Image 1 (cartoon, rainbow, N blue to C red):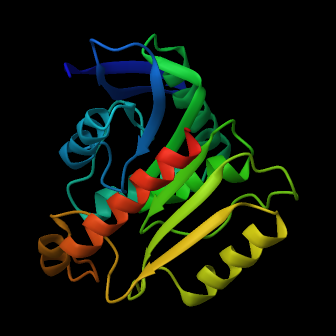
Image 2: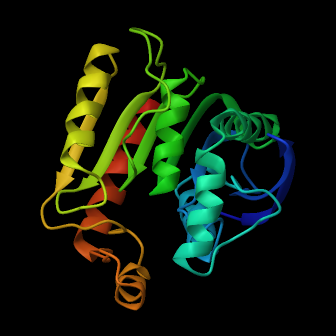
Length: 242
């Protein structure tokens, strides 16, 4: 494989987005997968995931939900950026739609086979993309928020859904878990919910434990859960892209 990673700039939701895209330069069009960042923004962790996904044979796009490639270096900064999107989901919706359009327009993408995955805030955004009926084969959430900005009508969700959740994640209330499961059931969504025993919020990010200690947040990396959820994602994508 000859993996190439390059910037991908696109417009949407009143902002200029500075994403990245990675693909095998020696291959033809592949299924395209959007990767939506945590509240920290499109940082090196997410860019690393983009390259990992490209190495699996996909064209992977790290999208920028904040505009101008903004990132937060503290919980206050990250929270302000995230809440700026969550407080204006009309623009947030336009941004995820613009990212999908940019992905589908790329010459290395089979636009008939696309998906979205995300971490934390990005998990919530990916689930929102499914809820509003975007033309996606699949959506994967890793320790994502589960609250809904849009209640889907039965049959309106096109994507299959995989949720990888930390069973000890206190940042996602049990009520949100039960409400989410009911919402997906009511809408007739093909949804799988995997709860990993002992895993806290941020279980996939090797920086989570240090950040949790530094800022007094209930975050922790869990190597076993990271590997298990990544494996579950691979199996899921193999299925939805078959």
